[in-house]
Length: 254
Image (tube, rainbow, N blue to C red; front, side, top):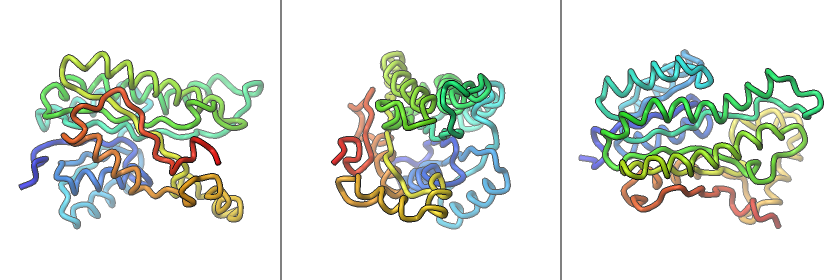
């Protein structure tokens, strides 16, 4: 019997890319995994895939930028299982590109909601159930853009991810008395559908990105999943308020 049997992990944005690999890894680790997304048909397919691999999984469709949806669904998960042991705030994204002079308030609010509000909404709703978990933790996603402020047009993405870096540490301070750890991962360039457009239209540019990574290759979703698995585990029981770079040394440049 897995030592994680009976434990519950919630992974937002888990119907593809890094999120799905994280959900699969936690499922293989023995957790019951609740996948969140906004594409219900895809979510149902992902649950079938995981079930076929022996993972206990279910899908909950809700939009992480909508406060009421997040609160209602996270609460429903917690009440169904009586606990939440791991919350992985994986959902997020660039949201598009816009320079500040032309940036609409709606675009600004959308990117902040997608990357920062979502972490706040999900974490707040999960805390009462994390308190009932075993070795509970929250794992967030920041980015190099949180330090570099992002490339042209990605400034508000960088701003939102800097917020995630700060809220990770703030939550860690706030929740330490309950034994709830809060950490973040900062993936570098990971080969996922996130980069599908440039991979299809400018394959030479996509391939060249590996030249800026010390280890000489792009990351794979499994590279992130392994670190999330560690942070969720008892092996990381004395790790909190940390951000782990998963970029093959990319953050240092070459």
